[in-house]
Length: 241
Ligand code: OAD
Image 1 (cartoon, helix red, strand yellow):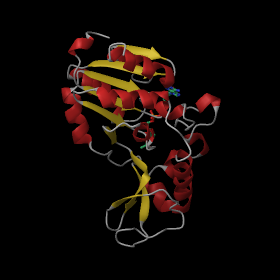
Image 2 (cartoon, rainbow, N blue to C red):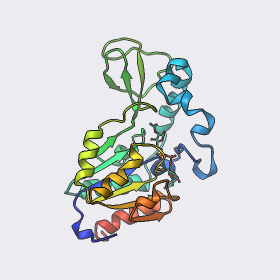
Image 3 (cartoon, rainbow, N blue to C red):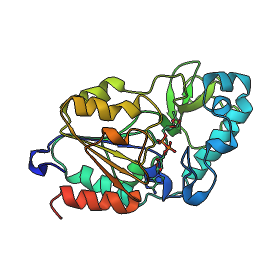
Image 4 (cartoon, rainbow, N blue to C red):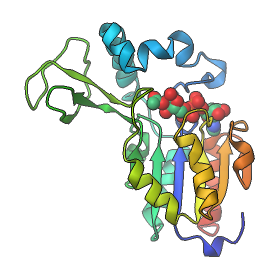
């Protein structure tokens, strides 16, 4: 993986594959052959603003189930290894996650950016506030800030702009190493980060169960489970420690 000694600034992109071994379904392939998240629902129905307008009950039920489920899950070895890297890496490091679960944080990672939002937050479309949220939204509970019953999941849907793109691009600009973990490379803009990082001079490494759609863009691809590959890579970059 090039010359490790020259690596200072790291950007890590994670996707559903990093949480698969915690028992959270990925979007495009089932964990251990189980059903994927989208197979049971059309994306247009549960992950677009138009779907929400058409059938808010369906959308609330879908996210209420997911929000309840993630609270029963635990971080796995991949989350733990990334948290350890975050704790000891003194140069810049940013974990950009497409995941809406909180398993990176529960493993102890601090430098985490949720570009697709978070299950454990609700967004009030009346007053635009975002509140920590663990309960169901199906019953239309009032917004803790303005009392309006206009809360929606704080999750970025198709057709909506991911969060904090400026901060992500600034980090990619300075990155010496870009690592993509457990993502299929099917959804932009995240799928384009490898090209951005590489064009800007970073080394690029992919850790995934199977080659992603953008696999050819990476300097190196390692195939396997995140729970095995990530701890091994972290040990390697920390000098075998
Ligand atoms: P996907 O479900 O598209 O891809 C998950 C990837 O993880 C696949 O390439 C799997 O092969 C791989 N994978 C599965 N199990 C793994 C394991 N144990 N270890 C390593 N890799 C494993 O999920 P994402 O790429 O995250 O967006 O999907 C991107 C976005 O699509 C999501 O954030 C979501 C969805 O639309 C929004 O909700 C806005």
